[in-house]
Image (cartoon, rainbow, N blue to C red; front, top):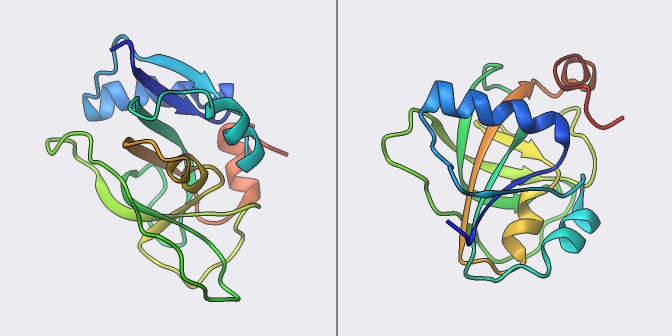
Amino acid sequence: MANKFIIMAEEGERVLLDRAREQLGLDLTGAQLIFTGVGAINIIRSLQHLDREAELVNIGYAGSANFDLDTWVEVTEVRLNHPNVTYKEPELKLSTLDSQLSTTKAICYTNCDFVLQSDYKDCVFDMELAYIAALGFKHVHSLKYVSDNLSLHAYHELTHGVE
């Protein structure tokens, strides 16, 4: 597994590794852990040097307008969230980890800022995944843990994350 990486935005997300092992039976033994920092610039700076053949597993917190808190979501596709304009973008499909994982499958919308409201349902929102996928890695997987229902206060209570 020398070419397998677990990608997380912040140190505070490390607890999700134990949860994924316990709740989902996920085994990432031997994978190298990289904390990137939050947002596009941190993703690009942290991952630009990695081999595009590397296998990346992004694990992190995400918000959702309607998924229950503490739900694991395996992301099947990622897009940028730009609800006020429409323009053509490439489809960024992700690889699945294991068909045996007991997770909800959904799209993730990546944002430059925390999403406080959205009409989008049955999806999750984060701040990094689209940038990871857009860098051209051939094997990108993502598991998101629903931390909030578009509430910055609830996110902070659970994660003590970005301010």
